Amino acid sequence: MELGDSKLRAVRVLGQGTFGRVFLCHQIEVRGQPERKVCVKRIIVRNPKTELGLIKEEVYIISQLRHPHIVEFLRSFSHAGTVNIVMEYVPNGTLRDVIQQLPSGTGGVNQDRLMRYFRDMVVGLEYLHIRCVIHRDIKPENMLLDAKRPRQDRRLWDRERPCAQHSTAGGDGHAHVHGP
Image (cartoon, rainbow, N blue to C red; front, side):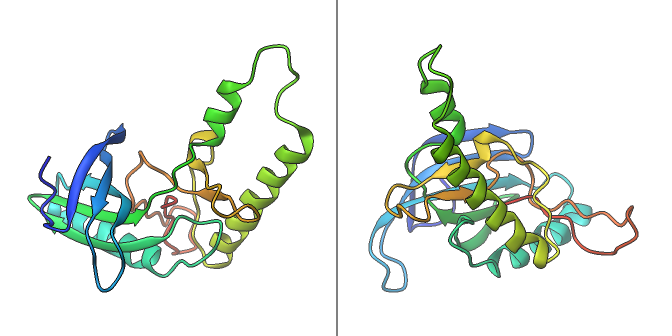
């Protein structure tokens, strides 16, 4: 699959939704950063007049987020009617995967482990809310696990939803943005 960036090679599709796909990609060296795996969230722009400005605004908002419990934005680019958001690859599955792998009758996830997951999620959400960013799709599939950071291994993001979801219905005038 051609992504429109010579530094990226698509390996496989990680997820798919109404608005696009997420690819696991191999990225060659970029700006002194070594080769590595990344995720590319490809958003199909169906109506550029109405959607492109909203998507660009969300890309800007996401690019400003820096927190150990939020998936890291790396860069973005446009290609052939799509906007592509390159983000860190968090390799160890989701909380949904953990739940599904539990043998039936075991009583579920260890309570201490569950409390760590919940605490990290709340800390990440608090960071977003302080910045007037609302995730709007909190679920186990959007809670990624990263064993490289044992103390900071839960990350929020959203693979399937479109980036920009602005609403002034609440009258607050703030952008309501889905998690990265």
